[in-house]
Length: 319
Image 1: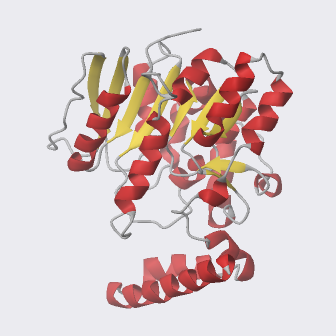
Image 2: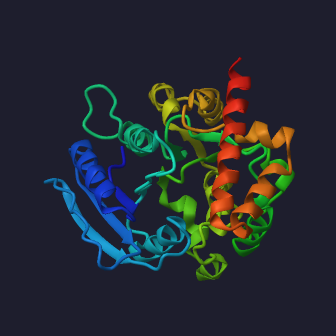
């Protein structure tokens, strides 16, 4: 087993959320680990992970651009190649949702979850035991890209061209992506992201709903791993994959398990927007333009109507 020091990359926008996450991380490791925090606010006081196993915690101050994605790319460059496995996290709050805190706890909790009797995250142990695993998303968050390309098509093309990455948008619709932009990853999978040319693609922060470079890369992280011949999966598949690795399973068997064990329909946090798009393909485009062009009071009214429509869609889907 190749046990190197894993590096945890965390983009911190909310100091209080990070304090909770830091405690979760401290309780999750009984072995050396490193933390790299990126932060868009130099004045923000950030907690240090209180663990005897923390090798180092470093902070990189960044501009407020590219959400959590551009800071991650820049941190990857600064840290360099001297690690094998990393974990990407961010202080997701989702203030517009009543279940925002539960959602964040699900994401980090399933990525940090241990196997029975172990004192390290099960996904990390799997990736150290099996070099063919390239990315592990949170449980139930490896989602279909069907109807999730839409507004991102232009940004996806720009990113693919910059990374010199083959991209067929129709084929991409049949693929999966790591929703939430949190995951365990093998560093070598993201070598293409080290090109400085990528930075110029990231837009200024304007509260965009979709269609940015950050959204495009969220849809491509798993594809980048697969382009390297690695397997991308989610946390619910880790137990089955771990057993298969112990039994010396073939690459084909691991690839099949990595997909067959996925349970995206068990995700209680993702609204049924894709089905809504299939029925009303112009709806999200309308919502996007409303967000940018309506006066805020009118947009708030429109948003209420959109939420009502999504709740009806959810009820229809479950009936």
